Length: 108
Image: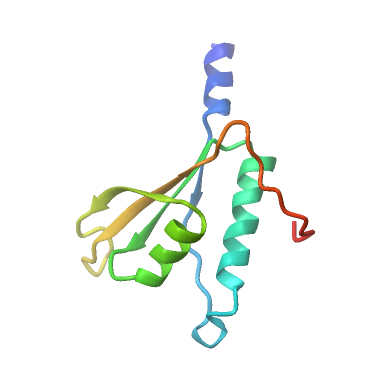
């Protein structure tokens, strides 16, 4: 039982439920900075092996941020996922076992 609990702890997946930046503050790097900080905390402090999130199929700006900037991959198309019947993509970022972000930033 203890080994099974340790295995579950070692396989934690983080989840980003919602991240939004007010319209008049967009395109200033705020969203990217927030994602970067959350990913670092999930990886370093919580020892997550991956992070998942969903984003609307129509939200190409979010897809670009997550996929091109941070390396998330599309795992699944979720048909009628949202209350407005909108479709979503489930995205996942896997953290490499032996790599860390090499930032000289102090934006913990």
